[in-house]
Length: 417
Image (tube, rainbow, N blue to C red; front, side, top):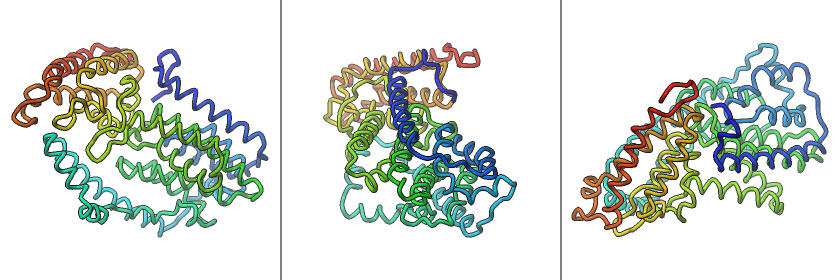
């Protein structure tokens, strides 16, 4: 989707944009002290025609990309032949990509079936399943099912070799051609880590390593804030923002563990991520309560994971609890939902079609969750907590009414949705 017009942005958009600008300013300060290496004409053509546009489509800022390639140009000179129309061949890597994709698709299908089964379970049944899955004996069985096949693809700092530079071409091409969300997520993480690790490891002048690390750290910080606000089209469910955070944290711990400024930047990024997407514990409860439900419009821009996270925050908590899984007291749910719906109404016309679909899915799920007949069916002996019996019909009705009115809201093409 296009970047928002400033006047249409939410308060959270504006805050995240300000944090992105702060990171960009720090990047500019570092780049001012780094020598610029002019790329050869051939490398320049390869960057312009293929590499930078491909990175841009997966969430990189193209202006920042050019800045980074200008200070690491000698590192990437082996990519120059791409500009002359030469298509590099690597049968072994191509086979690995194909095999990894197959494994990821199988795992994705299994997870999809599990998600569908969980959605149909009552809260008590889900709680019992969670307790069983946390049994130490079952944890080891679960580890056997975790597919780690994609780690064979070169991108980790210690495993990279100088001749791996052209892998960037294969990874970006594979991502451009990929139509499966789960494998696209894997490829996005690989590209983010590969570009950063290779650029730092094979910097042309060892004396500039610390400054290069700082440049990439601030660049990736800026792109974290950029992608947290607005994920790249087609990768809404990919959590690309988290890929940038993961790498920034790893490289800071490796090369600048005592840098307090970087520590604070990581803490801020993690705090804002966890506020939008609370890390639920084994019993499904968020560590702390919602501060402002309006922020969840940004979470709803992030595809299925965003919808699932927001629905969990609003979800009916375990039996004998008086609050949602997001630790929101039941009595406060109508007010929180009304605040979020108000934010949605103000922003709806500028949101992408994918986000508008996520909004409709969220409202439908909340309506079903708080339907009084369903609540009676899922709670022991048909007796939901008193607060929930009171607010349930109201919340369900609010969700239905707002969803029904959404077709009257204008969209970017001037038509109603």
